[in-house]
Amino acid sequence: MNKRKFLQTLLATGGVVLVAKRYLPPGSASSDPAATLQPPVPTGSMPVPAPTLAASNPREEFELMMLQESELRPGFKHSERTQAGEVVIQKLPDETVDQYLEKIRNFDNTFASDIYLREANLKLLLPTIARLDRIQGFVGHANFNLISFEEILYFARNYPEIGKFEKAEMDFMDEIFNADATTYGFFGEKITPALNNRILQKDVQKIDGNGHYLMKGESLAHYLQIHKDVGNELTLTSGIRNNVKQMHLFLAKTYQADGNLSRASRSLAPPGHSFHGVGDFDVGKVGMGEQNFTADFATTKEYRRLINLGYVDIRYTDTNKFGVRYEPWHIKIENDAVTHCSHGSSSCTA
Image 1 (tube, rainbow, N blue to C red):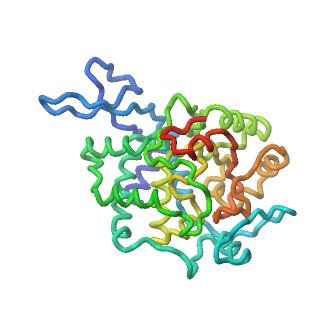
Image 2: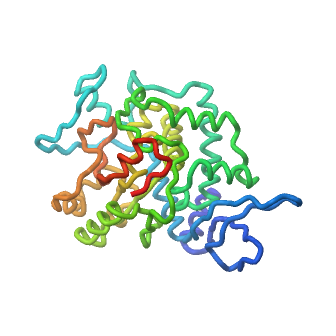
Image 3: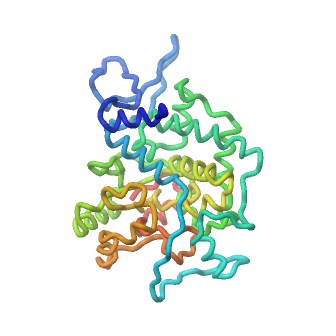
């Protein structure tokens, strides 16, 4: 058993507890788990304010880590459901409808028209992912869903175990964020156009038992109603995700796809394009694990109950116009936040 799996096993069984490292300001009680994080202060310098992180729950952190690993694994082919009148595909540049559907239904295959990272950025891919990994481990998987780019730069500058971002790495992430995603074959709109978008703790609520956050308002109310109507076997598998989290997921998916940006974007919206940033969320069946991120979820009674409710919409159907695989687990939320964020605001709140 390798070191990582050994630590995961210990964590799962309660044999070891992992928590975000926190430096307590003078006068704070060391037992306070929600204390403000402060960096070491060099002699003769003024303290630099640090972002405040919510306390971490070890069990939730472990489950979030395992769910993320599931999200990042390559998907597999599945048979498609059909629904009369469902086709919503609109303008498809240089492709027939059949060619388009072949791509999203065989999303993990490689196609001749796919776009790849250029060689210079391919060399930056793994070290950038590794630094983001270290930040996520430092602040906790739940907090990592909320923090901004300005905050990750703060942590990288101030904590040697993370290490300061190289200029080339920052330029690389900026290029990925500002790229025209339609060149990859992703046709969704830019939802959060500000790279340093912030999601505030006061605007979200943590869901008990799984560590994920939901935007207060329509998103939270919708999930609570769904959970009540479908039953306790339905669980939240992913909630609010800021640009930092989406960047991490997208780069990891690109690495798995050997630098194939088109293949990555068929499984995951590029950073800035994810509706998770403004309220969408994912659901699954308790105990299904990684299968919740496959079409297998559509075979469960929980999914059938969702659809039969009549008020639940799936964002990425099997004939969606975004260039994305079928995601029966992704719940669509319509709210004013999308319009708000699409006009260049630096803060997206519901």
